[in-house]
Amino acid sequence: MVDEFLNQDEIDALLSGTPDSGGGTGGSSLADDDFSVLNEVIGIVANAASNVIGMLAGRDVTTNIGEQAEFPQNTVGGKIAGSKVFLYSMTLEGLDSAPARLITTESGALALADLMMGGDAKELPTEANDLYLSAAQEGLSQLIGSVLTNLSGIMGGTRLSADSASSSLDETEGWIPFQDEAEDSPVWVGRVDLTVDGVEPFSLSIVMPAANAADLAARVREAMTPPEPEAAPPQASQTVTPSRPQPPAARPAQQASLPPRPQSPPVDVRPVEFAQLGGSEFAGSPGNIDLIVDIPVRITVELGRTRKTIGEVLALGPGSVVELNKMAGEPVDVLVNGKLIARGEVVVIDESFGIRVTEVVSKAERIRSMGV
Image (cartoon, rainbow, N blue to C red; front, side, top):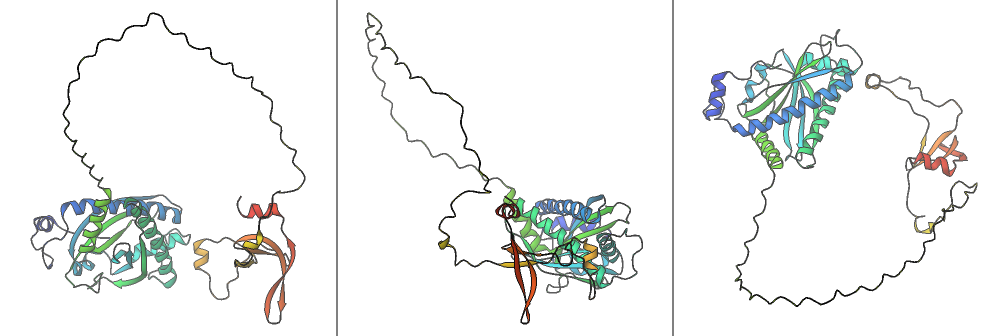
């Protein structure tokens, strides 16, 4: 997707802190150790992409960590292959609402969407429609969720989430990732190259303002640095007074005899006897039910269930019919806080639906529905 972020002269200019050739406002705001830490972040993105896209597509996915660099954001569009870029925008809660972007080419978004909908990414439309854009956004949303979960673990359980998420397909000419920033403000870009079995390779790039990327690197570095051991408090000086040698004690003429040990009483050992189980399902006192009778619970009536693939769900529209696992006339389930409690038949009360309870499930069935 991104063809050689920087040439060697630009890299040398960044490392030396001098203005780059892209017309930026100044030298690099990311230090060498920042790039080293951010490379670990790109590794997390690569691992998540392999797992999530591989699971969604049902194919083997090979990832490779590409280049990372910092340059003015008004040069990003010119480094993307193709005339359009698919953009997934978000703010990262837990990192001071830092803005971030996940980008790929239009062809990469089409391939990802087609794989999610059960296709083989061989015959793709010439332009991305709403169905394909929604599928691509859902795939990248799950990818970001996996990235933030792994990043949270590295950062000691810091709660991270992607808020204000949206996607769009933009022209690459004159495109900048962050409209609220100056056109030549520096951004950090890290790339992951993906090869899905049987699909044309494509790339994903994560983009952040350089200042936010430096803050992320600092937080990850701090979380990964073990705390220094506390110095032991100095010991108070003590003056040791040598003791005078004591004369040896006189050896007793005869070893004192020990009193005899008392004999332990015999232990009664016999097999354990269990009471016979009766025919009742469960025994036990209900306790004081009056203490909880005023607690509200949620009652749900479930008509039926079914399972669909992501592609089938995305294909739903007005007039679509979803077949459930219940037969016509079969009792519906009555759930209390998500647990099966009874069954009944649907009735109409005035202009509202209601349920006539025909069966209260047994205690054993209620226990099974609770997963006990």
